[in-house]
Amino acid sequence: MQIFLDTADIEAITARAGGGLVDGVTTNPSLIAASGADIFERIAQICAAVDGPVSAEVVATDLDAMLAEGRKLAAVAPNVVVKLPLTPDGLKACHVFASEGVQTNVTLCFSVNQALLAAKAGASYISPFVGRVEDMGGDGMDLLMGIREVYDHFGYETELLAASLRSPAHVEAAARIGCDVVTIPPKVFDQMIRHPLTDAGLEAFLADWKKTGRGGLA
Image 1 (spheres, one colour):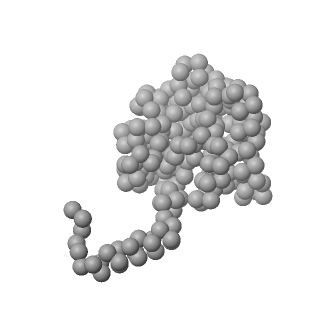
Image 2: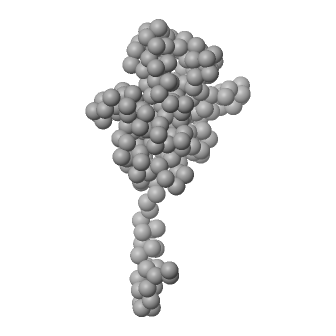
Image 3: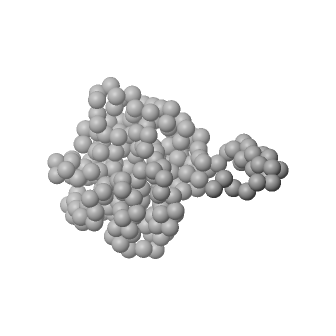
């Protein structure tokens, strides 16, 4: 399973990009706005910091403007994935980009039916929003399972990218379902690494070694 960071904070990305743990990055207009950076400059910086896919979202809502913005974003770097809203014009733009060989991430998905349509339009990625579904009393993991079942049944190549994940438990559940990708805030990425028993075990090992009076192994 691939792990993407969901942020436009270049420092947060570069601090975690080493070691082969981060496979890509997703951004959205809200994250870009919070960064205070120019969208094209920031996307270029992120694309230089990671080797994998970087989702950059259009802000237009009509087809022609989506295509114009998407092409401009795709020209920033070879690893840009054009992010499109799951709307009628967004799906049409997705189909056009698929025919042009431009990768797309169809976002704001909240139902299996929407995910089915995105796959038929040729989306490279579909982004169901788990946390927001649960905010409305729904079952976000059931949504992921439904999409996984349909995609596997019909052999769609669209990758299932679980978004709006808010905890390591969300990540684990998405992995068990078989999501191709999860995208998570840096905070959740850091939480995945830590465990109190790991910390306690390391502290005990080091304390025992210190008792020997020896230094490091180098």
